[in-house]
Length: 185
Image 1 (cartoon, rainbow, N blue to C red):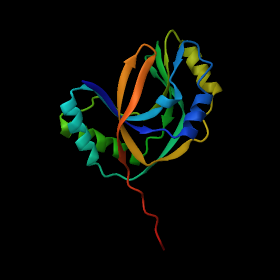
Image 2 (image 1 turned 135 degrees about the vertical axis):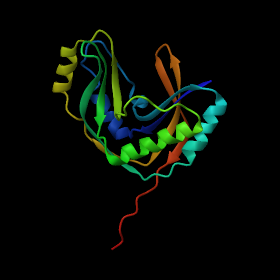
Image 3 (image 1 turned 90 degrees about the vertical axis):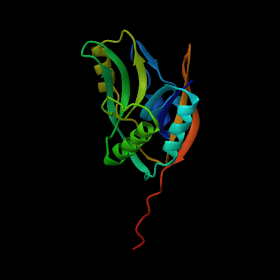
Image 4 (image 1 turned 45 degrees about the vertical axis):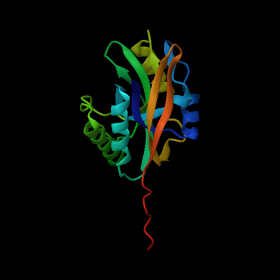
């Protein structure tokens, strides 16, 4: 069995910008910068045969490079209990198009469709015993990090190993996105 997810990697300059603002929130367990990514589809724990089928389906995706923009901070959780803080990713037609292609590929490979609505983001911290007031204050005091834009030239199939210090991610396969041709005239 292997635990997998499909994601856009975050470039080093953006990782550093996010690392700089990853502090100052009580009860936060900060995600290490090397684990920053934008999930396109969480696959879950599957057997190696199905993992191979997922890889084959992802290899057939033809999609253009994507301009990605971080556009602020937000949090997930209930009205009473925040669960995580994240950097929002602008929900552009291009990122939705790629996410739908990935979703379609993994469903064709044999997985059930994702039931949750897609919300592109970079998780910064998971929260324990953090109040909504603390989260709201953190978000007010921080601004969208610079640089906030980058071009995604590939997406990756990652494996995830859970350890006592948190998840460890490993790149299993790399899928290029097509370069968009500039008009010559």
